[in-house]
Length: 196
Image 1 (tube, helix red, strand yellow):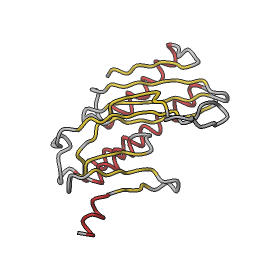
Image 2 (cartoon, rainbow, N blue to C red):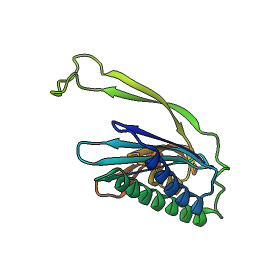
Image 3 (cartoon, one colour):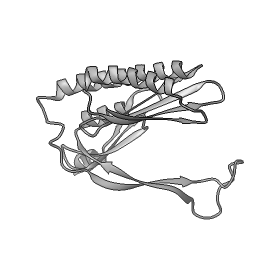
Image 4 (cartoon, helix red, strand yellow):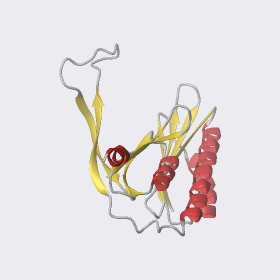
């Protein structure tokens, strides 16, 4: 298991690194196995601490969890608790979907550009007079998934949405987190099929 532990605005000392790695190892080896990689970041915030965990599973899925606490160890405990809950849910869903489809049998994922755009000019919220400025750019994979698998991927991450290619018809779909706590699903091809 290769997990990097770093600090932001705080030094993640050896004692914290040993503590968090032991807790994560115990949880992940119980459900997944030892062949994992990832990153844990401890952040000092205005009030308290936040621990962010990002673990890549053998299947290529990225599991993310965070925890807040009054001290570094309390935030680590909360993050590991959320991580365990997500991994346990993932394993349960894998067992229920095992008969329907192999997780590694998907079509190769398509790469898409992911841009972060700055829409305001300053802290006062003044909009740019011109087009927005691109401040970050990354690659994002668009996988061929069923809707239930896409929801599982969304549950494993802390992302607000997931764009995927629907395995049933090949069209682009989106699942997203709603304000009410439920998951929404956008399927433009369902409307095209209904009107045709």
